[in-house]
Length: 302
Image (cartoon, rainbow, N blue to C red; front, side):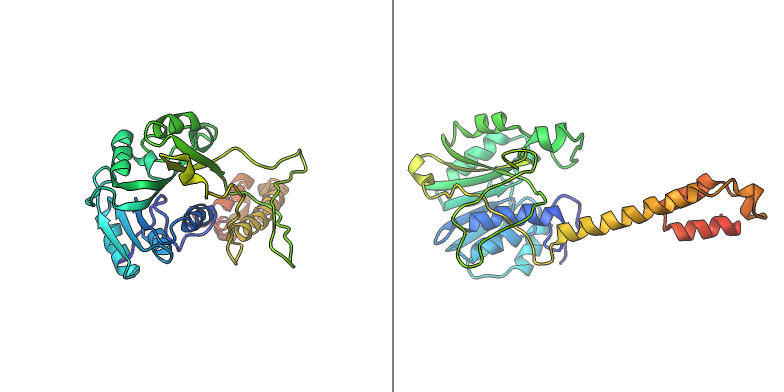
């Protein structure tokens, strides 16, 4: 079966910022599941669980959507991978079953935050690691005025930390945000460090749009978490390609609007039915393919 893109659940066929954001989290998590038993809570379409299964001993993807689980079980087949339909507050797995639990972009879809974290603690083996991501409400919603219809309760950094700390006192935090950049890297050896530079100041690190937090009960369990800057892109450079296409298209539309606005009152210089058409109506043509609308207007068709 295939899943319909709703604007919220990520599908691998998506392009643009979403592909960078979602893949990035799982690509990072992949480094920490080698030889581990893994639970992917809110596994969605299933691509992330499948990626993790290539490194882990075993992976269970759990999602509340029976359709998503049926799709994942069909599309992603691996002997160490299975998907189950379940609410994240009640996963039908034994206590202490997993060495690593990941839950990306889940917590904002529920209000039962304490029940969710108690379930994570129940399922996590002693010495295990919990990796969670969450949108940063001030940047994601407050500043932009954008309201995601699928989000029930978004958190800021202080709220997320206050929620996590009683359950997992040891935490390593990362910020995530898609951004345009120029990459410069050594060709003859591996890079040994990373800098984020800006023409406007000393650093180019923006405000976090998302948080990614590694959580554990003991600090030594987080010693292997690399404190590094990582970048994710795709071979087609889809975000930049889409931006470039939109930029060119906008430039053409602005030129067309300017040309249309420069036409004098058409009624004084051209015969009917052209003379009956107002310039404003031609300007409105850009809302459709403008040549189609303009042709209709000039021909008198409506």
